Image (cartoon, rainbow, N blue to C red; front, side):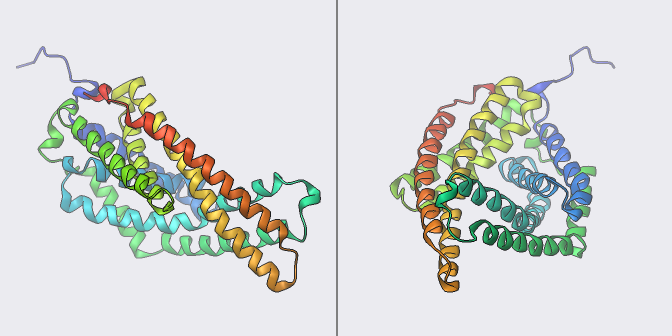
Length: 301
């Protein structure tokens, strides 16, 4: 018998189907970017790393829709790959950040071979990290991850909850992800000077952002706007984290310059400027976070 009922669309479709479409896109990005990752093509490592992060975040937030025995090993291996791919990418981002900070100074305020030292050190770090990344791509562990992701897509391990309409189960999952951010936010506010806590806020906010992005196809412009709000949070707290790392790195360069008998005052100025950037980024992050947490997520209900 042929049913006259309209086909389910948008958030009325099975939740697992909505999630697996997004997961499949990220797996495809990993595959497509691999040749570029090997040759260190522009943006390839970044895109590959983000795909791994998006996969891991989706597997965590949407976990109840999927078989835990299948998901848990994949999430662990995606974390490993993200860390390996992160090393060369972090060196690349740090170099851009440090040189941008240096460009903000007047030429007369720069004493000693500051730019030369920064570029040489970070280029060497990036090159070494990229060698390790390629070795990882050639290894059995990465091959097993790729096989696991492939099998994951061929035979999606959807639970009973994953077969229910998206509107029936997704609101609770996104609420839980938002609550996780809120708890970490409350903890950070109790000790605002403990910067590692803000980094934990950022990681939870990234998971929320990626999962809103995963539902844009079903949730439309409202879901896209929600993802943008969370993106503002992650960008601000990303600037905060960059300033924290740059402050430490400039301090290291200052110490090494002193050992070589080179001028250290430029590094000192750069280091102190990162403190200003830190407080500005933190203030922006809090404003963005308050706005994102105030969103009732009506679009997914």
